[in-house]
Amino acid sequence: MGTDDPEAGELMLEPWVEGKVDAKFDLTWTLVEHKQCYTVELDYRSDLFKAESMELMLDKFRYILSQITTGDNERIGQIKLTTPEEEEWLLYGVNDNAAQYPRDATISQLFEEQVHVHAQKTALVWEDGEWSYADLYERVQWLACRLLGQGIKSGSSIALILDRGPIQMISILATLQVGCSYVPIDPASPPSRIEFVLQDCDAAVLLTETAYVSTWQSVVPCIVPADELAAFDSGDMQEPVEHMNKTALDPAYIIYTSGSTGTPKGTVMSHRNVTKVMKNSNFVTVVPEDRILQISNYAFDGSIFDIFASLINGATLVLISKETILDMARLADVIRQQRISVFYIPTSLFNLLVDWDADCLKSVRRVMFGGEAASVSHANKALACVGPGRLLNGYGPTEATFLPPTTY
Image 1 (cartoon, rainbow, N blue to C red):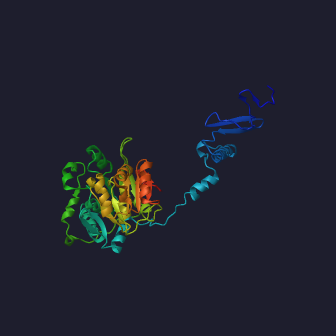
Image 2: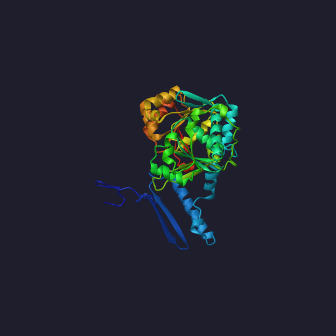
Image 3: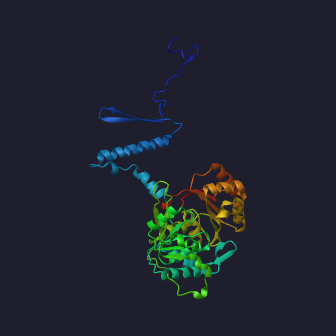
């Protein structure tokens, strides 16, 4: 066989193009010393990486080296991993999300604005009852006066152990009205967790229901039975309680983490944290015509959207029982009958609802689901039903106030 013969029996030969290399590994960096310099070679699998990505990686490496060689005694922690161009893009390009919102207003101020503008509009719906913004505000004032009568001081923490319903919402708003932060506790939580939270947050007062008073009297001596609101009489009203927060940076609530990785930790959020997400946000705009469904437990961060996106924007908040939430047929009926336009729902519950009756979502303007990984099949099924631009999926821990979403 001659060397010029490209073929010999069954053996096929082909010329080897200089510079063409089959990568032995996914990604290989090679530094070769050559006279007064070093040559860097980067081998990669083209089926895994794009050439543009590799160029960017080399640019980063070159930038890191330039800092090392030109810096004066640079510490490793001071070396930047992003180039100036990439930093500019990250901060002011892709992250250009500035929005105008009432940064100096408290939640109580924004709620009172809605009371003045939408006094007779329905604020709350619960079972067969409805409360206008004026009705709700009267009850908030009554309970706020009751709290002040207990000697509560602005800046204190008030713990809440309450079942679902209007009293829960009134207690939250009354707590904020007197300048305190509320600490929501699920009555169904293990007693050990409840006791820990009550002690850890140093609650000045416990707002609860008569049925729970004797259980927690020894942990929080000052207890106000919030269900006394059932005997509310507008004729008993005293002078209105002015909102007592000093600034929008005052704490609004403390929600405790699950404690799955250790001891539960209280996460403190300010009024500004809430208003930044709920007013003029870049993921959903709530208007007075909206009807928002409260599904999330008030001790979970998802409830922050349900409660405040509705009540500081003049919308209607529809409250439902735990039994309704867990019954997909009843939940689908509520969405239809109450003409729900916006709501947040945990992913696992979203999947169940889509499997049961995805058509109930057709009239909903925004459906937000999150808290765990999304199911692609369920998201696609819902998307086929409601159309693009109406599903929002996101994830955000308690420390983020709410879920930063992705729209489909």
